[in-house]
Amino acid sequence: MLLQFLYRRQKYSKTRVTIGKRTLNALLADTFVKKMIGLMFRDGLPSGTCMLFAFDYRSRQGIWMRNMRFAIDIVWLDERKRITGMKSAAKPAYGFFDFTTYYPESPSKYILELPSGFLSRNRIAKNSKVSFKI
Image 1 (cartoon, rainbow, N blue to C red):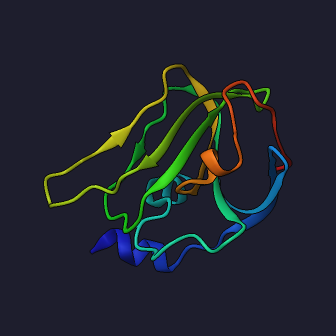
Image 2 (cartoon, rainbow, N blue to C red):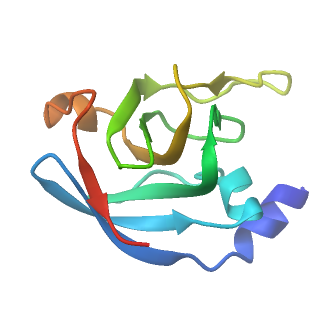
């Protein structure tokens, strides 16, 4: 499969993301291919890690759950890095014709994919500030 081929050849930069009182190591999805693949084909997110998607402009970017093997929490951020939307325990797509995609309520510039349960365990709320450097 083409996506698996591309996934195996990606090299990810890393940055630190602070959300609430937690600081995580983030894989940076900063190219078209990395954004398209996201966390596909992985067995999970190691403890203390997340994936950060950075876009050039604000839009209603959806998270496609195709080829995902585990649930995640999703956070959408505006250009000031404030949380504008959240989805807890987003479930993977199942079956060949399942194109499950989660969208934010409003345009965002950044997206975080976090381990499922992170938002509730850390009491993260909408409008909270997130910090990171790209």
